[in-house]
Image (cartoon, rainbow, N blue to C red; front, side, top):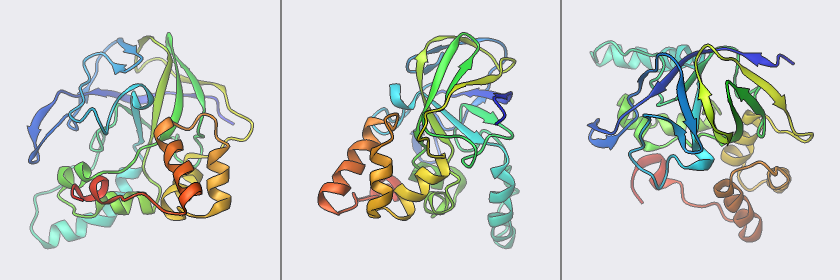
Length: 235
């Protein structure tokens, strides 16, 4: 298990009127050291504090490798419709951290990393939402993303401190029953009422409170919460 990973870039964004919505999804490269608080990187804003951000979703990391996948999947349709060349690269998914060699298949829920002065812990996969559809002009990107479990993941901050792109993510702890982020996505999104999968998720003590509440609700009611607003922006 490789325990040290260097990031390719760090990104922060300001709320602005873009793509027909108030959003901070457009993020810029951060040069030099930056302070990481319990709620995220200094200078990074959140356009929807109900559904994004907060202490359980302080940072979003997205594998840079995935952009080649999305380009291959969608660029032909863009070309056929004479859409201007699309720039498939970080930070197009609104990520704060961009990396190579860390993917949903190698990163586990609860993985704890030393990053500079800070310590961060993987709290959940990213829940794809309609803002990605608007950002890329692709109606079902959010659906396609969760179907293939290429969602990226979120962190909570255990210990605030100064961080930089020059400091590696050093894995310092992995829980004994850890599920990979892909396994969590596969269970939560693609087989949402499978009892075995739900019980496995229930046993993940580091899963964010919001995701755990949904897992417990499914176990109790055998019903899946509505995804319409998250995926498409309407009830």
